[in-house]
Length: 400
Image (cartoon, rainbow, N blue to C red; front, top):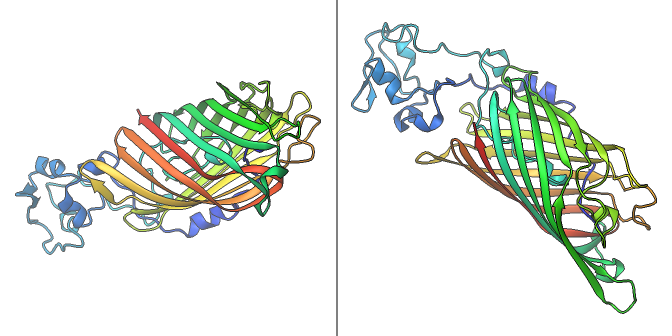
Protein backbone atom coordinates (compact mmCIF):
# COMPACT_ATOMS: atom_id res chain seq x y z
CA UNK A 1 0.00 0.00 0.00
CA UNK A 2 1.02 3.22 0.65
CA UNK A 3 -0.05 6.27 2.13
CA UNK A 4 2.11 8.97 0.47
CA UNK A 5 4.45 10.97 2.71
CA UNK A 6 7.89 12.65 2.54
CA UNK A 7 11.55 13.45 3.42
CA UNK A 8 13.32 16.13 1.41
CA UNK A 9 14.23 19.44 3.04
CA UNK A 10 13.58 22.76 1.38
CA UNK A 11 16.93 24.51 1.24
CA UNK A 12 16.22 27.07 3.96
CA UNK A 13 20.02 27.46 4.15
CA UNK A 14 20.72 30.64 2.25
CA UNK A 15 17.35 32.25 2.97
CA UNK A 16 18.94 34.76 5.34
CA UNK A 17 21.37 35.73 2.60
CA UNK A 18 18.52 35.92 0.11
CA UNK A 19 16.63 38.09 2.56
CA UNK A 20 19.56 40.49 2.83
CA UNK A 21 19.87 40.90 -0.94
CA UNK A 22 16.15 41.16 -1.71
CA UNK A 23 14.95 44.75 -2.11
CA UNK A 24 11.34 45.34 -1.14
CA UNK A 25 9.23 48.51 -1.19
CA UNK A 26 8.18 50.54 1.79
CA UNK A 27 5.18 49.24 3.77
CA UNK A 28 1.68 50.46 3.09
CA UNK A 29 -0.46 52.34 5.56
CA UNK A 30 -1.81 49.66 7.93
CA UNK A 31 -5.09 51.42 8.49
CA UNK A 32 -6.51 51.06 5.00
CA UNK A 33 -7.69 47.86 3.31
CA UNK A 34 -6.66 47.51 -0.34
CA UNK A 35 -10.26 47.05 -1.46
CA UNK A 36 -11.03 50.63 -0.29
CA UNK A 37 -8.56 52.29 -2.64
CA UNK A 38 -10.11 54.19 -5.59
CA UNK A 39 -8.90 53.05 -9.00
CA UNK A 40 -7.53 56.51 -9.74
CA UNK A 41 -5.05 56.36 -6.88
CA UNK A 42 -3.98 52.83 -7.84
CA UNK A 43 -3.40 53.98 -11.41
CA UNK A 44 -1.32 56.89 -10.16
CA UNK A 45 0.84 54.53 -8.12
CA UNK A 46 -0.21 55.66 -4.61
CA UNK A 47 2.12 53.73 -2.28
CA UNK A 48 0.47 54.69 1.00
CA UNK A 49 -2.90 53.00 0.75
CA UNK A 50 -5.01 56.18 1.27
CA UNK A 51 -8.59 56.11 -0.03
CA UNK A 52 -10.85 58.90 -1.31
CA UNK A 53 -12.42 59.49 2.11
CA UNK A 54 -8.98 60.13 3.60
CA UNK A 55 -8.41 63.03 1.21
CA UNK A 56 -12.01 64.27 1.37
CA UNK A 57 -11.57 64.69 5.12
CA UNK A 58 -8.61 66.97 4.44
CA UNK A 59 -10.40 68.86 1.67
CA UNK A 60 -8.04 67.56 -1.00
CA UNK A 61 -10.39 65.36 -3.05
CA UNK A 62 -12.52 67.14 -5.64
CA UNK A 63 -14.59 65.63 -8.45
CA UNK A 64 -12.91 62.24 -8.35
CA UNK A 65 -9.27 63.40 -8.18
CA UNK A 66 -6.72 65.13 -5.96
CA UNK A 67 -7.04 68.93 -5.80
CA UNK A 68 -4.10 70.80 -7.33
CA UNK A 69 -1.45 71.48 -4.68
CA UNK A 70 -0.74 74.97 -3.40
CA UNK A 71 2.72 74.03 -2.12
CA UNK A 72 5.55 72.61 -4.21
CA UNK A 73 3.63 72.63 -7.52
CA UNK A 74 4.81 70.31 -10.23
CA UNK A 75 3.50 66.96 -9.00
CA UNK A 76 3.64 64.39 -11.75
CA UNK A 77 1.45 61.40 -12.44
CA UNK A 78 4.32 59.20 -11.32
CA UNK A 79 4.40 60.93 -7.91
CA UNK A 80 0.86 62.19 -7.23
CA UNK A 81 1.51 62.76 -3.53
CA UNK A 82 5.11 63.99 -3.54
CA UNK A 83 4.08 67.65 -4.01
CA UNK A 84 1.92 67.50 -0.88
CA UNK A 85 4.83 66.61 1.43
CA UNK A 86 5.03 70.19 2.75
CA UNK A 87 1.34 71.07 2.38
CA UNK A 88 -0.26 72.49 5.56
CA UNK A 89 -3.36 70.33 5.00
CA UNK A 90 -1.26 67.19 5.14
CA UNK A 91 1.25 68.26 7.79
CA UNK A 92 1.38 65.46 10.36
CA UNK A 93 -1.25 63.44 8.49
CA UNK A 94 0.59 61.95 5.52
CA UNK A 95 2.94 59.09 6.45
CA UNK A 96 6.57 59.85 5.60
CA UNK A 97 8.28 57.88 2.84
CA UNK A 98 9.48 54.48 4.05
CA UNK A 99 12.98 53.04 4.03
CA UNK A 100 14.44 51.25 1.05
CA UNK A 101 13.90 47.77 2.51
CA UNK A 102 11.25 46.32 4.79
CA UNK A 103 13.89 44.93 7.13
CA UNK A 104 14.79 48.53 8.01
CA UNK A 105 11.19 49.56 8.51
CA UNK A 106 9.50 49.88 11.93
CA UNK A 107 6.19 48.98 10.25
CA UNK A 108 5.09 45.44 9.44
CA UNK A 109 4.63 43.84 6.05
CA UNK A 110 0.92 43.14 5.75
CA UNK A 111 -0.08 40.64 3.05
CA UNK A 112 -3.62 39.17 3.04
CA UNK A 113 -4.51 37.53 6.35
CA UNK A 114 -4.99 33.87 5.60
CA UNK A 115 -4.56 30.65 7.52
CA UNK A 116 -1.51 28.52 7.92
CA UNK A 117 -3.31 25.41 6.78
CA UNK A 118 -1.98 21.91 7.39
CA UNK A 119 -2.75 18.47 6.05
CA UNK A 120 -1.43 14.94 5.68
CA UNK A 121 2.09 14.73 4.27
CA UNK A 122 2.25 16.96 1.21
CA UNK A 123 -0.89 18.79 2.36
CA UNK A 124 1.25 20.34 5.13
CA UNK A 125 2.68 23.04 2.86
CA UNK A 126 0.92 25.53 0.62
CA UNK A 127 0.67 29.01 -0.76
CA UNK A 128 2.80 31.77 0.77
CA UNK A 129 -0.14 33.90 1.83
CA UNK A 130 -1.31 31.03 4.05
CA UNK A 131 1.30 31.89 6.66
CA UNK A 132 1.27 33.94 9.89
CA UNK A 133 0.58 37.60 9.09
CA UNK A 134 0.51 39.44 12.42
CA UNK A 135 -1.64 39.73 15.52
CA UNK A 136 -5.10 38.17 15.27
CA UNK A 137 -6.84 34.86 14.78
CA UNK A 138 -8.06 32.60 11.99
CA UNK A 139 -10.47 29.68 12.02
CA UNK A 140 -10.23 27.40 8.99
CA UNK A 141 -11.77 24.24 7.63
CA UNK A 142 -9.75 22.14 5.19
CA UNK A 143 -10.71 19.25 2.90
CA UNK A 144 -7.95 17.17 1.29
CA UNK A 145 -8.55 14.24 -1.05
CA UNK A 146 -6.52 11.63 -2.86
CA UNK A 147 -7.38 8.37 -4.61
CA UNK A 148 -4.35 6.06 -4.68
CA UNK A 149 -5.12 3.55 -7.42
CA UNK A 150 -1.90 3.10 -9.46
CA UNK A 151 0.88 0.74 -8.48
CA UNK A 152 4.32 2.36 -8.63
CA UNK A 153 7.82 1.02 -8.00
CA UNK A 154 11.02 3.03 -8.18
CA UNK A 155 10.63 5.62 -10.96
CA UNK A 156 7.77 4.14 -13.00
CA UNK A 157 4.41 2.41 -12.87
CA UNK A 158 4.40 -1.31 -12.12
CA UNK A 159 1.96 -4.18 -12.81
CA UNK A 160 -1.03 -4.08 -10.46
CA UNK A 161 -0.69 -7.78 -9.61
CA UNK A 162 2.66 -7.12 -7.93
CA UNK A 163 0.92 -5.19 -5.14
CA UNK A 164 -1.71 -6.78 -2.91
CA UNK A 165 -3.22 -3.34 -2.26
CA UNK A 166 -5.70 -2.27 -4.93
CA UNK A 167 -7.25 1.06 -3.90
CA UNK A 168 -6.90 3.58 -1.08
CA UNK A 169 -9.25 6.60 -1.13
CA UNK A 170 -9.10 9.18 1.66
CA UNK A 171 -10.96 12.38 2.47
CA UNK A 172 -9.12 14.34 5.17
CA UNK A 173 -11.24 16.87 7.06
CA UNK A 174 -9.49 19.36 9.32
CA UNK A 175 -10.67 22.06 11.71
CA UNK A 176 -7.93 24.47 12.68
CA UNK A 177 -7.35 27.56 14.77
CA UNK A 178 -4.35 29.84 14.44
CA UNK A 179 -3.98 32.76 16.85
CA UNK A 180 -1.11 35.25 16.97
CA UNK A 181 -0.98 36.84 20.43
CA UNK A 182 1.53 39.38 19.11
CA UNK A 183 3.08 40.03 15.72
CA UNK A 184 5.86 37.63 16.71
CA UNK A 185 4.32 34.79 18.75
CA UNK A 186 1.32 32.59 18.21
CA UNK A 187 -0.11 29.08 18.38
CA UNK A 188 -1.92 26.72 16.04
CA UNK A 189 -4.15 23.73 16.78
CA UNK A 190 -5.29 21.31 14.05
CA UNK A 191 -7.97 18.69 14.76
CA UNK A 192 -8.15 16.14 11.91
CA UNK A 193 -10.96 13.78 10.97
CA UNK A 194 -10.93 11.43 7.97
CA UNK A 195 -12.88 8.89 5.95
CA UNK A 196 -10.90 6.10 4.28
CA UNK A 197 -11.79 3.28 1.87
CA UNK A 198 -9.25 0.47 1.45
CA UNK A 199 -9.45 -2.49 -0.94
CA UNK A 200 -6.88 -5.27 -1.16
CA UNK A 201 -6.35 -8.85 -2.37
CA UNK A 202 -7.55 -11.39 0.20
CA UNK A 203 -4.43 -13.51 -0.24
CA UNK A 204 -6.32 -16.64 -1.31
CA UNK A 205 -4.77 -16.70 -4.78
CA UNK A 206 -8.20 -16.52 -6.44
CA UNK A 207 -8.05 -12.79 -7.25
CA UNK A 208 -10.77 -12.02 -4.72
CA UNK A 209 -10.65 -8.57 -3.11
CA UNK A 210 -11.78 -7.55 0.34
CA UNK A 211 -12.60 -3.98 1.34
CA UNK A 212 -13.11 -1.93 4.46
CA UNK A 213 -14.00 1.69 5.06
CA UNK A 214 -14.06 3.72 8.24
CA UNK A 215 -14.34 7.25 9.59
CA UNK A 216 -12.38 8.33 12.63
CA UNK A 217 -10.11 10.91 14.26
CA UNK A 218 -6.58 11.53 13.08
CA UNK A 219 -3.55 12.74 15.04
CA UNK A 220 -3.88 16.26 16.49
CA UNK A 221 -1.14 18.82 15.88
CA UNK A 222 -0.14 21.48 18.41
CA UNK A 223 2.38 24.11 17.32
CA UNK A 224 3.94 27.38 18.44
CA UNK A 225 4.75 30.04 15.82
CA UNK A 226 7.51 32.65 15.87
CA UNK A 227 7.92 35.37 13.22
CA UNK A 228 10.16 37.90 14.95
CA UNK A 229 13.39 37.55 12.95
CA UNK A 230 12.63 40.59 10.77
CA UNK A 231 10.31 43.56 11.24
CA UNK A 232 8.40 42.69 8.07
CA UNK A 233 7.57 39.15 9.36
CA UNK A 234 9.05 37.67 6.19
CA UNK A 235 10.83 34.81 7.99
CA UNK A 236 9.24 32.51 10.56
CA UNK A 237 9.45 29.11 12.22
CA UNK A 238 7.01 26.72 13.85
CA UNK A 239 7.60 23.88 16.30
CA UNK A 240 5.43 21.52 18.30
CA UNK A 241 4.06 18.00 18.61
CA UNK A 242 1.81 15.60 16.76
CA UNK A 243 0.01 13.63 19.48
CA UNK A 244 -1.46 10.12 19.00
CA UNK A 245 -5.16 10.96 19.15
CA UNK A 246 -5.93 9.06 15.94
CA UNK A 247 -7.19 5.48 15.70
CA UNK A 248 -4.43 3.05 14.67
CA UNK A 249 -6.20 -0.26 15.43
CA UNK A 250 -8.93 -0.51 12.77
CA UNK A 251 -9.56 -4.11 11.69
CA UNK A 252 -8.61 -4.96 8.13
CA UNK A 253 -5.93 -2.28 7.76
CA UNK A 254 -2.15 -2.48 8.19
CA UNK A 255 -0.34 -0.01 10.44
CA UNK A 256 0.76 2.12 7.49
CA UNK A 257 -2.88 2.35 6.34
CA UNK A 258 -4.37 3.48 9.66
CA UNK A 259 -5.64 7.05 10.10
CA UNK A 260 -3.40 7.47 13.15
CA UNK A 261 0.23 6.43 13.52
CA UNK A 262 0.20 5.74 17.26
CA UNK A 263 3.39 7.78 17.59
CA UNK A 264 4.26 11.12 19.15
CA UNK A 265 6.19 13.23 16.65
CA UNK A 266 8.30 16.35 16.84
CA UNK A 267 7.15 18.99 14.32
CA UNK A 268 9.59 21.56 12.95
CA UNK A 269 9.08 23.97 10.07
CA UNK A 270 9.83 27.36 8.61
CA UNK A 271 8.86 29.81 5.88
CA UNK A 272 10.18 32.78 3.97
CA UNK A 273 8.37 35.19 1.65
CA UNK A 274 9.45 38.14 -0.45
CA UNK A 275 7.99 40.69 -2.85
CA UNK A 276 9.18 40.35 -6.45
CA UNK A 277 7.87 43.72 -7.70
CA UNK A 278 7.77 47.18 -6.04
CA UNK A 279 3.96 47.18 -5.86
CA UNK A 280 3.96 43.67 -4.30
CA UNK A 281 1.62 42.35 -6.97
CA UNK A 282 4.08 39.49 -7.60
CA UNK A 283 5.37 37.57 -4.58
CA UNK A 284 7.50 34.49 -3.93
CA UNK A 285 7.12 32.09 -1.01
CA UNK A 286 9.01 29.15 0.46
CA UNK A 287 7.88 26.75 3.17
CA UNK A 288 9.09 23.49 4.74
CA UNK A 289 7.52 21.23 7.40
CA UNK A 290 9.18 18.25 9.05
CA UNK A 291 7.61 15.38 11.03
CA UNK A 292 9.99 13.31 13.20
CA UNK A 293 8.55 10.43 15.30
CA UNK A 294 10.34 9.89 18.64
CA UNK A 295 7.84 7.95 20.81
CA UNK A 296 6.33 4.84 19.21
CA UNK A 297 3.88 2.04 20.04
CA UNK A 298 3.56 -1.64 19.26
CA UNK A 299 6.73 -2.09 17.22
CA UNK A 300 5.88 0.41 14.49
CA UNK A 301 7.99 3.49 13.75
CA UNK A 302 6.70 5.72 10.91
CA UNK A 303 9.29 7.15 8.56
CA UNK A 304 10.81 10.60 9.03
CA UNK A 305 9.07 13.07 6.74
CA UNK A 306 9.69 16.50 5.24
CA UNK A 307 7.52 18.44 2.76
CA UNK A 308 8.53 21.69 1.08
CA UNK A 309 7.02 24.19 -1.35
CA UNK A 310 8.27 27.10 -3.43
CA UNK A 311 6.07 29.25 -5.61
CA UNK A 312 4.86 32.57 -6.96
CA UNK A 313 1.49 34.33 -6.66
CA UNK A 314 -0.10 37.39 -8.30
CA UNK A 315 -2.20 39.69 -6.10
CA UNK A 316 -3.22 42.39 -8.56
CA UNK A 317 -6.63 41.08 -9.67
CA UNK A 318 -9.87 42.52 -8.27
CA UNK A 319 -13.56 42.01 -9.07
CA UNK A 320 -15.18 44.77 -7.06
CA UNK A 321 -14.28 43.96 -3.46
CA UNK A 322 -13.35 40.36 -4.32
CA UNK A 323 -9.61 39.74 -4.57
CA UNK A 324 -8.53 36.94 -6.91
CA UNK A 325 -5.06 35.47 -6.38
CA UNK A 326 -3.78 32.86 -8.87
CA UNK A 327 -0.58 31.05 -7.94
CA UNK A 328 1.72 28.22 -8.95
CA UNK A 329 4.06 26.18 -6.80
CA UNK A 330 6.53 23.32 -6.87
CA UNK A 331 6.17 20.78 -4.06
CA UNK A 332 9.04 18.51 -3.01
CA UNK A 333 8.32 15.63 -0.65
CA UNK A 334 10.23 12.79 0.93
CA UNK A 335 9.92 10.12 3.59
CA UNK A 336 12.15 7.37 4.93
CA UNK A 337 10.83 3.81 5.15
CA UNK A 338 8.78 2.65 8.13
CA UNK A 339 10.54 0.40 10.62
CA UNK A 340 9.58 -2.21 13.20
CA UNK A 341 7.96 -5.63 13.26
CA UNK A 342 4.54 -4.14 12.38
CA UNK A 343 5.80 -2.33 9.26
CA UNK A 344 5.35 -3.79 5.78
CA UNK A 345 7.57 -6.75 4.81
CA UNK A 346 8.98 -6.68 2.21
CA UNK A 347 9.53 -2.94 2.60
CA UNK A 348 6.86 -0.95 0.77
CA UNK A 349 7.22 2.54 2.23
CA UNK A 350 9.49 5.53 1.82
CA UNK A 351 9.86 7.70 -1.25
CA UNK A 352 10.76 11.02 -2.85
CA UNK A 353 8.62 12.97 -5.30
CA UNK A 354 8.09 16.31 -7.01
CA UNK A 355 4.67 17.81 -7.77
CA UNK A 356 3.44 20.86 -9.68
CA UNK A 357 0.44 22.68 -8.27
CA UNK A 358 -1.66 25.49 -9.77
CA UNK A 359 -4.20 27.10 -7.49
CA UNK A 360 -6.52 30.00 -6.79
CA UNK A 361 -7.56 32.07 -3.79
CA UNK A 362 -10.75 34.14 -3.52
CA UNK A 363 -10.71 36.72 -0.73
CA UNK A 364 -13.36 39.08 0.58
CA UNK A 365 -12.27 40.07 4.05
CA UNK A 366 -12.78 38.44 6.52
CA UNK A 367 -13.53 35.34 4.40
CA UNK A 368 -11.27 33.34 2.09
CA UNK A 369 -11.55 30.27 -0.13
CA UNK A 370 -8.37 28.53 -1.26
CA UNK A 371 -8.03 25.61 -3.68
CA UNK A 372 -5.22 23.80 -5.47
CA UNK A 373 -4.56 20.61 -7.45
CA UNK A 374 -1.21 18.82 -7.10
CA UNK A 375 0.15 16.72 -10.00
CA UNK A 376 3.11 14.36 -9.45
CA UNK A 377 5.76 14.84 -12.17
CA UNK A 378 8.53 12.67 -10.66
CA UNK A 379 8.29 9.86 -8.11
CA UNK A 380 10.72 7.37 -6.62
CA UNK A 381 8.93 4.73 -4.52
CA UNK A 382 10.62 2.01 -2.49
CA UNK A 383 8.89 -1.29 -3.12
CA UNK A 384 5.40 -1.44 -4.65
CA UNK A 385 3.18 1.42 -3.52
CA UNK A 386 -0.15 2.89 -4.55
CA UNK A 387 -0.01 6.46 -5.83
CA UNK A 388 -2.59 9.05 -6.88
CA UNK A 389 -2.60 10.83 -10.25
CA UNK A 390 -3.70 14.07 -8.56
CA UNK A 391 -4.26 15.44 -5.05
CA UNK A 392 -6.84 18.08 -4.13
CA UNK A 393 -7.05 20.70 -1.39
CA UNK A 394 -9.81 23.19 -0.47
CA UNK A 395 -9.68 25.60 2.50
CA UNK A 396 -12.41 27.91 3.82
CA UNK A 397 -11.22 30.46 6.40
CA UNK A 398 -12.49 33.29 8.57
CA UNK A 399 -10.13 35.80 10.16
CA UNK A 400 -10.88 37.80 13.31
